[in-house]
Image (tube, rainbow, N blue to C red; front, side, top):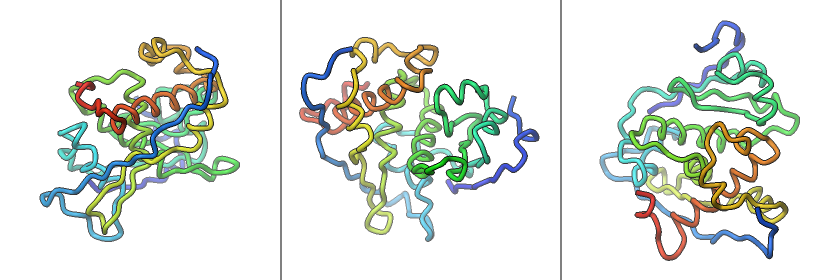
Length: 231
């Protein structure tokens, strides 16, 4: 699936319908390598990294290879423009710190130039593309697992000329957050939904992302292997 980047200059015309830490929290520095099957040929250079992510998603979503249509990525100039493209209001975007989202079978992202220091936009696109694949799956995911998988795959990197994907890289910001704040109790984390206050509060949402990532990382790469338990 090719990626089509679409700058959206005029979004008005594009409107669419607890516990205290008792020590250091760590995540194993282990990574996973996924080999591309022969039937999934690398794309012609330059590599379409987001589209190539599909073959690395197959172990979790067997249907990940099916979408053949181009991946539409709409780039807007400011968070306010994102509100005009999505179901979120400007106040909701400001409150949650939303910079991108997957909706209507496409990706919508605010240009890094709209932020003071920029942000890792490719990681963000991979995160949202993972959500896009998940939304097309017949298996609904709880919030913690959906965000955990999106963050887990956001470190995706291609090696060996696109023949191999490296997954599960450590995310320094998450590790720092896990060790400098009060964590969400596990039972609360597992029961968060999209209407939960923890999901919609920017100050705690970063903790939700960090814990979801750490738990997913442990399930997929920890010992003993717990991948089958996701089923």
